[in-house]
Structures are given as C-alpha cells and as structure tokens.
Length: 180
Image (cartoon, rainbow, N blue to C red; front, side, top):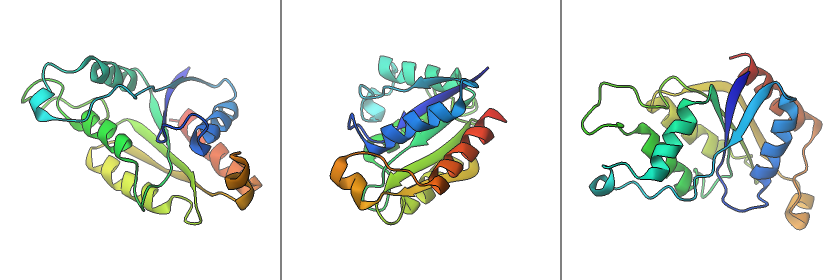
C-alpha cells in the first residue's frame, strides 16, 4: 500500500487547506496509508544550528523518506507560499551529514502533489512558486494540481465549499498519486 504524507501549509487548526486535505484523504478511499506531518516544532533553518541535526528535523526527514509521495495543501500568502512551509522545504534540501552534497536528500525524486485553496487566484502564484522550488530541490512535482477559489460563503462560514470541478481535480490528483 502506498504511503502518502500530507503536509498542510496553514498552521490554523480549521484552515480551508486542512479541510481540503481531509476531503482528499477520503478520496484516496483506503488505497493509501495517509500520514499527516506535524512540523510545528521544526526550527528555522540556521546553519549555525544545523548539526547536530535538531530532533524535529530528523523526524521530518524520516517521515518523507518513509513515504512514497508527499501531498501539499497550502494557502497563498502575499502571492507566494507560507514562510513555515518554505522553511520545511529548505530543511529537506540540506545535506543530512555535514558537507555531504553527494548523497541525495530525502526529497530528491519524491513524488509531490500540490493543492491549494484561497482567494480569487486559487493559489496560482503559490503553486507556481512551489513547483519552481520543488523542481529546484529535485522533487518530482506531479503535473496535476488543484487550485480552489473559495466562494464568499466559505469565508463567512469558515467551511470549505468545493465545486464539482474542484472535487474532480482532487480526485485526479489522488488517482495520480496512487498510480505512482
């Protein structure tokens, strides 16, 4: 059974993107072992404190290594990705042993799906920049992406509302991840 690691780019407990991840897990229909990454304890990347590797980073890398794929669900902050998500990916791009740039990191070659729910742009800027960064750090970014432009009702009720097209897009991503 495929192991898929869910990463939610919003730290808010009831975020729209967390709600979307819950929907995506249902769409996987038991075809995958889904694990949710808790990365709130991952420190800001600082080369002065990179080694010995902080325990939260060790756990992060292990979770990525043990997974067949990563599925990121993220909002767009000021036309880009959230800083804490960037920090997480920066840690994944760094060597696991001092000065060992020859050994691939845990993210290299990993299948990564990207989804996002937000304003009118449907997180297009964030998803484009994440695709660029993930490609740079040599992850295998899947071409299927889901961008959800939240309707006004979502903003007033704090409830994710997905259209049929949104659901079809998420299902296509789920199917692509299972097929990896």
